[in-house]
Length: 186
Image (cartoon, rainbow, N blue to C red; front, side, top):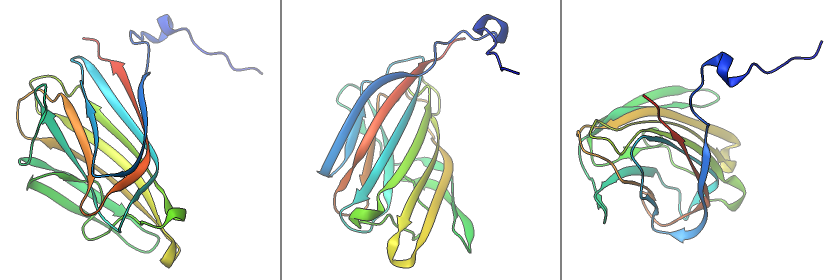
């Protein structure tokens, strides 16, 4: 029996789905910046072959205004880690950034170990506390294991976010990043 897709009208959908915004391949970048976030859109960032130049954590922070001004305080949330033999979580409290990986774990710099990322920002350019959720995978070849990081966090300020930035805790960043957006309807 062949399956049929219900019509959008039947489902009550009012959004046209995700639309492509940009794709960037970065090599030895101090940071990757995504600016010009519009009001009434959710944003999704996907990344692949992500490698810091040295084993490092990858951080996220928000920007405000047209320039933008990068915000360096009042992030809060939770980040977890799943590994073949262990798991755990770390709170993010009044932090200067959102750490996209758990505790002391770091992303591999090995060229064969590129990691992946999926990050969702919920309507950031509104005057509410901007929420995000993420999942990522980093392969650490030297110990033949995969680290899976996941989490949710927010910036504890009711200020519109117009940009966001990824950057390594040390060194530079390499990877491919694709940004999408989806109209938020009331």
